[in-house]
Length: 172
Picture 1 (cartoon, helix red, strand yellow):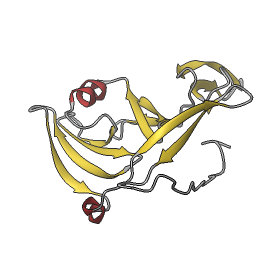
Picture 2 (picture 1 turned 30 degrees about the vertical axis):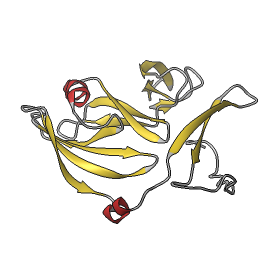
Picture 3 (picture 1 turned 45 degrees about the vertical axis):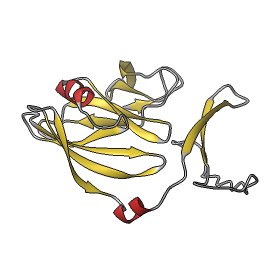
């Protein structure tokens, strides 16, 4: 169960329904909320968890996928969206806060990836602004991530600042 019961941050904990008690953490990430679990679609076992970092979903695996995904030649902002039962072929998505996502097929035998699709390919002809993550500490001591996107190729020294509040934390 995803719960804040143990540490103040959302972690994956064992929960006994009969006794209605927590019996320890399965996954915990200090200073961050775990936002989801990763299940093996072939046997339903839990093989990892997800969390947000710099506006990008990050996956952490505790099985063979951790070895293969770290060996992939894809960008660091990639995560697995599918794999075959033998972990021979892995489909990943590369995403970032300042460019459209791209899909790759990773072959674990050769160690190479092949582009198999892109989201919003029509944006490739444009020079998109660069985004950066700004971290600050709130009044209650919680680290808050904000994103700043600067215009591309701007020759004007003073550009307007647009603020887009989005409703707060990942969880309510």
